[in-house]
Length: 91
Image 1 (cartoon, one colour):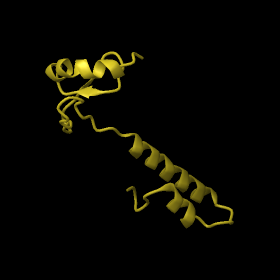
Image 2 (cartoon, rainbow, N blue to C red):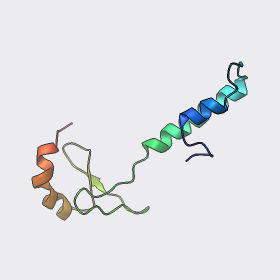
Image 3 (cartoon, rainbow, N blue to C red):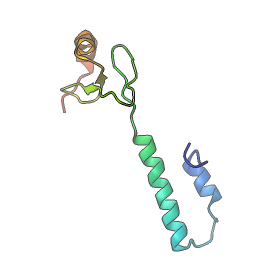
Image 4 (cartoon, helix red, strand yellow):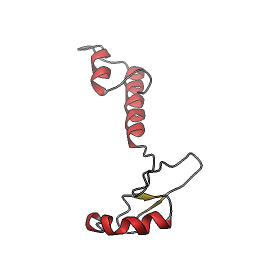
């Protein structure tokens, strides 16, 4: 939830329906929509094998081929390869 707004419908409902928005109001709404999109785009890496979540100071590596799944280390990546192989589509 960002700034008390949980979805775009709430933004639209709270907007002054039918009235022209002032430039500052349009800019404010545009900035809010950008913040919501950015927040949704954030990904917290989770190891595809052991399901451990990355901490704030950790960096997980992605699959070298598909670049879609994360691994906490080489061992997890090796152990997961037999099951991940069928879903791995190189980019």
